[in-house]
Image (cartoon, rainbow over all chains, first blue to last red; front, side, top):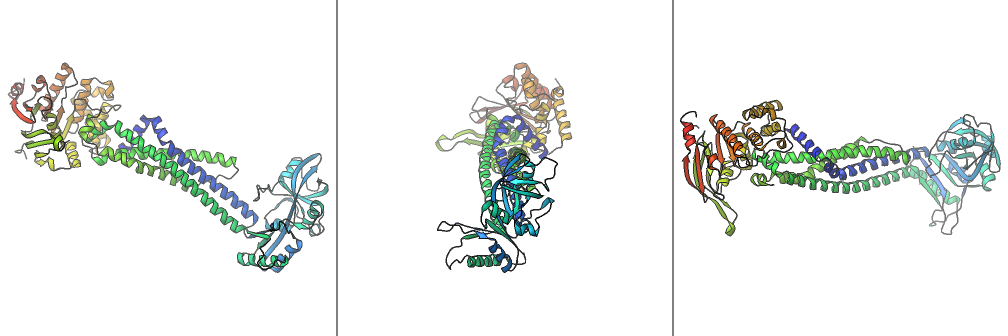
Length: 398
Length: 240
């Protein structure tokens, strides 16, 4: 009985194929939107999380901010040393200073960003060397003319297949020796391309590119056995003291906890997903009303058929089941089409916006079940109307 | 069981509408139909013959009176119980054939069996047997639009027969057919009646009524006269 009801439903849907497709368009689009947005959202979350974990899971980033008087008081190496030495639980404190420069080699040039860093900074940020060696202690101390290349810079000015290690290149007016090449990193958390950069010892960038002893920011890596909040409090106290801030004066610097950023990002992604769910629900609601409408039309068109079925002994619930099945099958097919469309769209869009494609079976199952559920909700009234028809009137219907 | 008449109507009334607009279509019908009878219900339009037919077919319930079918008081049954009664004991043939369009003759005949929960093989077998009874096996895979009026009505009869009902109800079965096809249908009904099915038929054509054993004449919502047809009497007395 159920098999033949299902068959009948499929036959009715095929009989009005164009109408069926147009009717389910709302469901198709709604489901496709949900699947696409959730899949892309997962991709974005995954890529951001990867980014943050590359910053180091237990890291603070500390940078000066503009005060009310409009001035910025930068940090210097002494601050970083103090943090590293005076706060219990801190394993690494390492500064960063950056400048723009053009890289030249063998007639090729490339505009890039030079960053003054230490080996400790590279370690804290989990940046590893693909080829060559890190800075030596001597090079760091003296700020020697040695550099580590990002992949993009290497590819831009060195011939493919040749090793740049040992080569002398020029960065703006500074000549330096390449001692290594960094591993591929991808897009940085601050929007900068971490592969399009050249790392030099801090002192070198300070002296030759910036002309002062300032740092742009520094990172603090801590032992996870310590409470992050306790470390953050000590950090703030120490820096306020060093900067001679009076009680009540606001901090003229900012401490960002990457773990918190991670959480905040999760919250934002969650909010976005909720918003998409609301929009999709509206789309599905509109789609559902479309289904209801077309099912009512179908019941009217087939009044005579319903009359015949009732006359030969169909029970009310059997007629209801027939139309309900049709609505559910219609919605379920719409759901499947939506999932297929969403699948294709998310693969395409993931490539376009450069996030990984993360397949989430749950959202596909949920969308499908939800779509089929729409069939029950919006198919019930038309089906129940069909089942309540008077067989005598229905048979007379032209 | 056998002593009891198949159908008994006692003081059946039917009123449509309420209050001032109320219209009494049946004003107290008493009628008994025995098993194996072939009854033609005749009368002018508005005489109540179709209303009576709808009640006899368990499609409608009387406003008053008692309708017993196989001893069951049908007026006390609910909608679904009457559906079950139709499904098991009644077969319908309509003036307008009422076949499902774009559905083959065989599938149309199988339809009542679907609601009886029979499996595909059983359905096919029974449907082919019913089509054979009306001589339409070669047309089994044709849709109604590919069949003539007479053939469509024979498919409809096969559909009514397929459940091996006690009663075949035919509402103006020849109303949409020319006289030659009409005679074919009447001979078919007569033959089926001869095989034991009780046939109830509404018609306004005397020539068609002549094939019945009993003619019930209606006028103004009442039974005016019950008569036994000459043909029927002739048939009853021996093979023609």
